[in-house]
Length: 319
Image 1: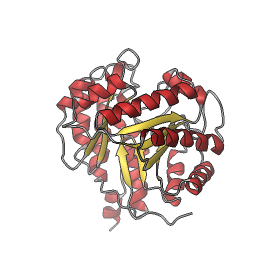
Image 2: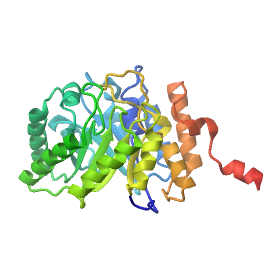
Image 3: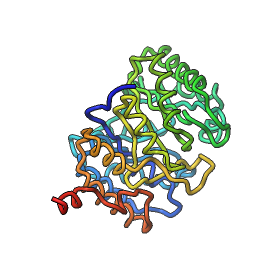
């Protein structure tokens, strides 16, 4: 177990992941307003849209309008998500506004891959071979593996560390065949099955096998353990986390409607601040962005920090 890191990088996924799961249409102008608000918080990575089928994910039928409409901050990497060649082509049209990189996306649970993408393990491996080749042909670097359902699955149950290692091996084999070097591995608790001990165990096994890989965590707060799992990741020296402002989002293919999405960005940022870990984030500005998201959706979001606020004004009052 490592000492706590001095600095952590938080990648904001609220706009992309949050709006894709809402039942009612969200105006493009509101999506753009949230992205612009988040751009003023000190975040350095913001995922702004999904270039996916509007039939499957109608919440992102307006991806082009949103990506064309926000005001870029040159210090921020704006990213998007896609799953096939058609999505890549749509993203390439915005290479002047987006930070484009390729990811080999796999799942430690074949049952989830079937539900999410209608592909078994072999089918997803072949799809990632084709997608990696398409990225290389388009001049888009492929440096990352994203592993979904790395800690458990609503369709298949517990996921053993051996399944995680096998899936990482699949991804590294795809990369090796294509002649690219993987630098980053994101382990996603897509359906909220992880606990702190499991986080430590899986990270430990992966690190023992591939110490050169930089690890990131994508944690869902489905059962309220998200921040506890983040703390376990911090204790293991993880320095990159995905999060969503206000706790926006959720996976539409997880088989659990209404479940919370990613850990709330402001909860993670507050935890880091209280531990003396730098994030570069203006926490008060981030809280205001979360409240804007609530106004856009006209409902409360799961984040406790949006209810309780930060500790700064209470410390000032006590002083």
